[in-house]
Length: 362
Image 1 (cartoon, helix red, strand yellow):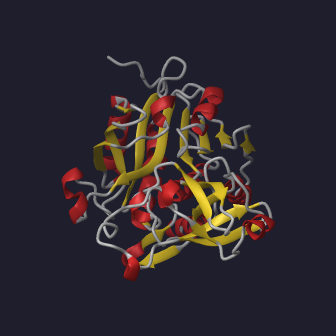
Image 2 (spheres, rainbow, N blue to C red):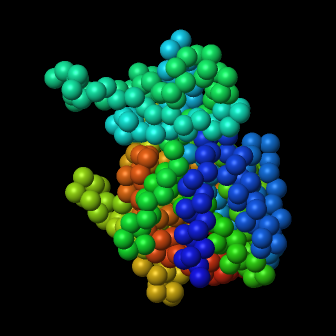
């Protein structure tokens, strides 16, 4: 069953380390699954995994993509006592770092470590409510000296991620590491299986790299593939907890979603206002297929579609996704029903793209 495959792929991929720029193990796992269904994939110079399913040349070509990488840290210094200092990589939630277990992906294999947290008994009043920044934390691997840490294969530049974990909650909900965006990877794998042998437009499936590092990988793939339409799969902020209630109406378990507006609002000032024809396509598909379709409009959210939409003569673009709680923490959470609904939505929407679909605005 589809949900069983989604669960298997998601849970297994969540346990595979893949910091931005170091996604090789994730890519290998994805390529092995593609090979099982007879799909040939390629890898470009940045590390994107690409599958092209040739289709009707009279229909606009589509690139459907999601990212393989996860956020984390890079080692920047190893102290004489063996404690490790890091720099953050990507939008790490520094409020969520303390006392987390991490995996250091060393040259001689993975090494476990813990982010130190000062003993509560010795924490002064002025420290109790202070959040340490990434450059301030120290990671303890237990080795006790710089020489021992280095002998274990850890050096400056070693990738560090939260230790992979999967927590199965009630009602088909999965929590743990890198749900962002291993859930998207699982959805795209299931979409690949669904499209084998089917007609429709030419579809390029891309599992991209370095999304968490300034949105790098998918742009390179799109420059080569030159799609007419870009559909990006990623999380959408679930707003069904008290701390998020004023941010929108996205509900975990309420079905897949589309983004009507995204804007980062800080740092990289970019975002996506989607193509109205693609919005109509998803809305009409959802209505015809009986799929509950949720809507999102958020500031503070950014995907690599932001850069793809401006390539060449312009790419008709839309962000699609699944509700997720606790973004950029070590215990992100999604609902398998939403992932399943997203596969159905994308499969049906691609089949409904007509010959000569008008993409020019106006």
